[in-house]
Image (cartoon, rainbow, N blue to C red; front, side, top):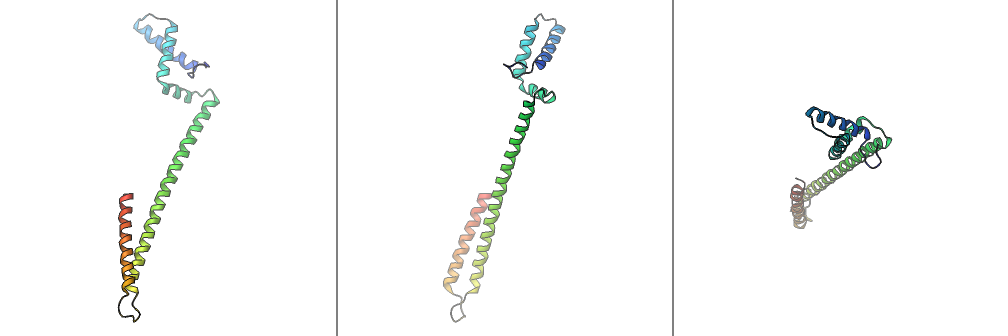
Amino acid sequence: MNKSSSIPEELIEIEAYKIWKKRRRKGIDGTSEDDWRKAKEYLEKHRWKVFWWEVRHPHSRDFALEIIKSLGISLTALGLLFALWEGLEDRRLTQERLITERFSKAVEQLGKHKDIQGTTPDITVNQRSIYISKKVSTSILFLWLRFC
């Protein structure tokens, strides 16, 4: 493999041979140096061919390590995205649970507290319960708009 280029010499030779065969079949004049140059230019434009050739013919350990590193980075990124998604989902569920608990407490307070004689409901407790119910319903609407 040439030090100045990352394209393996063997692959350039294969492509140059294909170009030479095509040139001979069409009856076009040319030199082997031209075929070599055209093969190199073609492979520089089509880097995916070099990649797949190296996958099928790994000549160096470095290439295999690069593939493993790339896979590791990709899997790590996927794992982080999954963890982020799960964290957001967990946060949403926690907020929903808290809202439900607050709403239940507010409704429970509406009918539970009576005045000192125990005959009529305590108005201040009922007012607080209604206020809390209103705030909880606003929070539910906000959450619904935010997550949906």
